[in-house]
Image (cartoon, rainbow, N blue to C red; front, side):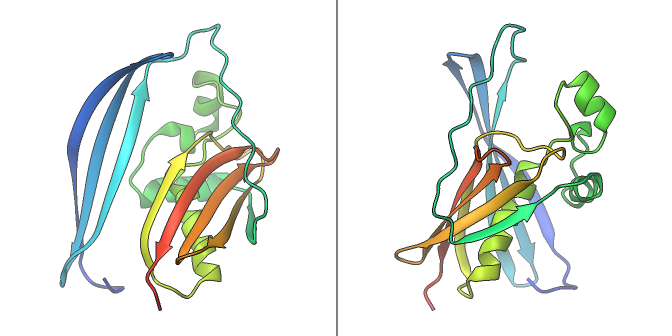
Length: 187
């Protein structure tokens, strides 16, 4: 794909399954996005989304694990209202937890605006792009704990053998928020 070319993105629900867990029933939805341009299929993206019921009033969220150490690359980020609003518009997400502070804090009970999982993944991929010239072959990520606009966070990474890279995002206290793995094409 090239800047200025017309593209088409088709999203389909590829699978839905349920599972009982210690926190109650979970619903897993696999959404597949296929992006095509003038030369045909250019990108296939799959999202595994997990839905669960609202936590009970006595339920305490588990503490996220500590982020890895030994980052070779690091970039500090402070997601602000403008960044979160623009990213919502870019990816067509209208959920108010990303741009309406009053709703996010008073209705949903979050400490601030929620940074989008895909935004954090984009920042991790950008960190890799800044430090590697090799084209990206695959990129997978998993959200561990949320990040908010009321505290800075860091995107970190390090090269691994065989053209791979380990990437992660950590909150201001050093807890893991997202982990990712990238595989680059050989030069």
